Amino acid sequence: MEVMFCNTKPCVAKPPMYREAICRMAKNPTYNTDYSINGVVTLKQVSGQPLKVYVDITSQSKLTADSKLRKHGFHIHQTGDIRDTCDASGSHFNPEGMHHGDISSSIRHVGDFGNLMIPNNGKLVTSFEDKKATLFGEESFLGRSMIIHALEDDLGLKGDSGSLMDGNSGAMAACCVVTLVKEGVADDMMKP
Ligand code: CU
Ligand code: ZN
Figure 1 (cartoon, rainbow, N blue to C red):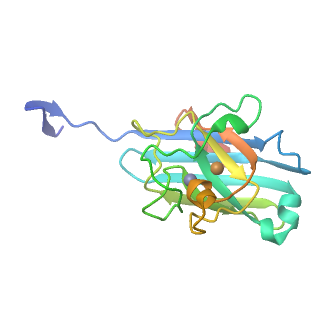
Figure 2 (tube, helix red, strand yellow; figure 1 turned 90 degrees about the vertical axis):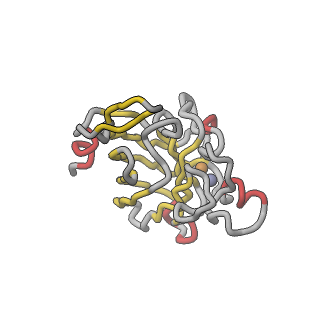
Figure 3 (tube, rainbow, N blue to C red; figure 1 turned 30 degrees about the vertical axis):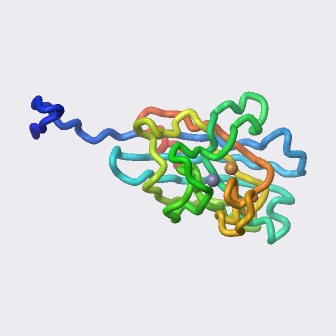
């Protein structure tokens, strides 16, 4: 093994770790629109490398009937307390004290994943990578919640206070808690 120096004493470099997590999306009972939304978000990461996010959800609703509502803000929120509803999940996960933004912006909350584009048939299977959000260390979002909003996230570009806070993405339509799973479980979840 490679020998490094930690606080002047020799120590051994830790090998990279690998983590998988899942998040089972379900409708927010307090959002009283006629719709259903469910599915799973699976997450994979090797420590020090980008997080991989796989989304497989189905939505049946007025959410998808109106083409203006096809984009839906998608974020990690502060807490994983969604025992009764999604509404106690708090604000966007923001350990760095930044304004709201897009996943590709340098100014963003760690929890900002931009929008999910749900097609008219309601079935969305997509994946993306992120260099900011992580399953490791002090800024890990394990145990926090993921939220799909009713409205499009304006990505912090509208210039009003709502835009800088949460992208004006409206009510929480669905949520789930990010749960650590054994290696291989995420792959099993992704099988059709
Ligand atoms: Cu949100
Ligand atoms: Zn945000």
